[in-house]
Image (cartoon, rainbow, N blue to C red; front, side, top):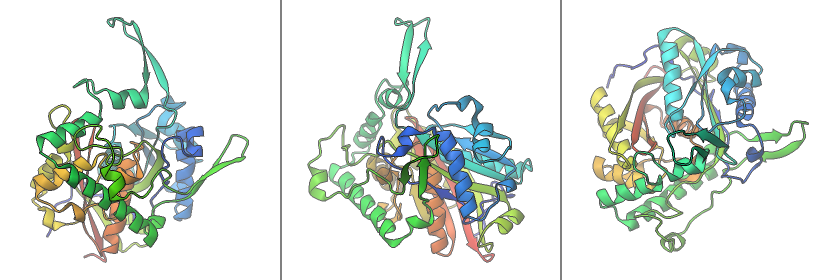
Length: 401
């Protein structure tokens, strides 16, 4: 099957990517550092490990959603933390940020503006800042907002918490609690199988945290907070909303993930396996009704498949951002697809949700899985901000196949 490419000039060089582990909220030394500085230094470390000189980068696209100190300076500051002085920009769209940043980088390359663009996404949910906002038309006049928890707890479009989206989706699509628990257990099995096989070691990079004096604060070498679940424990959990328990939703975490987008010629030059080609086939975004986030991913996927003229049977790897197991149940039901065929190497439901880098890590793991399969189409999709759906399609080929 030959499908036209959305960004025909852009490629992702295989093996030049990497991600930190995603320790859960307040469980690691990442809770103690400036996440922008850490991310820049971490990308520099990852590029060095992958044999890529930082001087090869022409531009930097960063994606983050939670304010961090000196965020005003954004990409120029982060690139300086990498030891480089290059221009760049910032991208933000809640949980869709990771995939949107990759698409922005592809546009830069496709337009011919830059030949090698770094994509660096990161967020720290731990100790998120509190902002004070003067509101002259509000009764309180001055309001304080805890960026992570207050936004998770209140959707301005509905007045409900983010968790209510999952309950709304479960009720609308008549999802069964037993299926949700079954999906959750299976997702945990997939994650631990990938971890035990060594698959995650190829994409996740242990990173040391130092304080301002250069003293060791800790090593980020595990998705801290992830524990194995059993059926009895999961079944005994209280429903926080319809079909949603503490076990069948993700958790707040910290982390970063990065990759490169470049031209076909430069990808061959930078990649340790130049015979592998990763191209951009298409992407799309949708919005559904307020508070129905779990249905947005399948709607985005349906729209994208219609644009490129493909079916799910044509896809080798499917991987999604699933903050709730309900998302997978709705997708499987509406797309008539076996949810066991998705997320073979783990997913955000299990390893956590730092927002900015979430879909970047999803993409890296999915592309790595496609390489193991000898190539094929890779479908990445997810939700964001209460009612947004996003989907992206990549093609992995080897030796011109």
